[in-house]
Length: 90
Image (tube, rainbow, N blue to C red):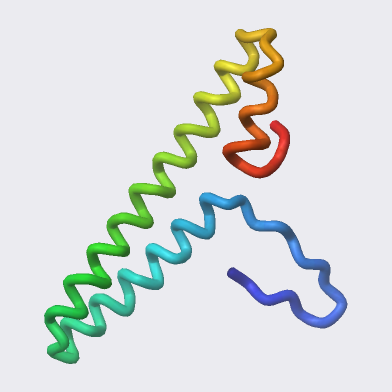
């Protein structure tokens, strides 16, 4: 996540982008841990990296599927589901 410079406004980050950012951080630290020889920790960090990448991919697909489903449905429950799952309205 980028820090705003003086005079800039902070742009909101889409929630699944944070998952990819966190996954990349775990991956980087995990690779460094392998080089440092901290093997049990490295395995755990790389496991978390893969988990974050998978969650990010699922979140992207879930958002697009929810939009398609919402366009086809007239139900109030479907329209409120986006705000429940993603914390914002589509």
